[in-house]
Image (cartoon, rainbow, N blue to C red; front, top):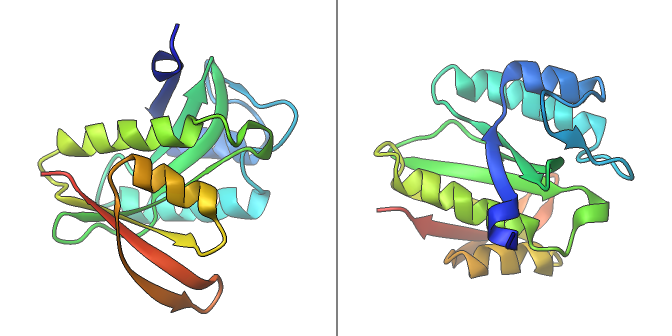
Length: 163
C-alpha cells in the first residue's frame, strides 16, 4: 500500500474530541502510543473551536489517521467567512517528518474543492517552522504576507484557492 493510501482525514466530532481529552481513542483508529497527538491545552482549545465553528460550519475538524493510528489533527480555527476557511494542523512529535501532514492537507484541499461553500483556504506558519512551510508549499499554497501575532510572534500567511 502506498503512503497516499495509508493517510486519511476523518471528521472529528465533539464526542471524538471528548474522548481525546480523556486520552481515549475515539472509535476504530488507535492513539499514537509514544507521544501525545496534541497537548491537553490544545485539545481543549480545539474542542471549544469545534463547538463554536461547528454551530455554523461543519465539518470543522479532522483526525489525521495513518495505518489505523491517529497521528495528528487538522481543524478550521476561525469561523468561515465569504468562502474562506483558515486552518491549523499538527502531528504527534514521534510521527513528524513522515509526510503525514502533507498528505492530510492534500486531502483537506480535495475535500474543499468538492465543497461549494469553500473558495479559499488560508493558514499561517511561524518563520522558524520550515517543515510546516514545506507542507503548505507542496500543496500549492502561496505565501501572501506576514503578520505579528501577540501570542505566536511573526507569522507567514498562506493561501490556496479551491475553485
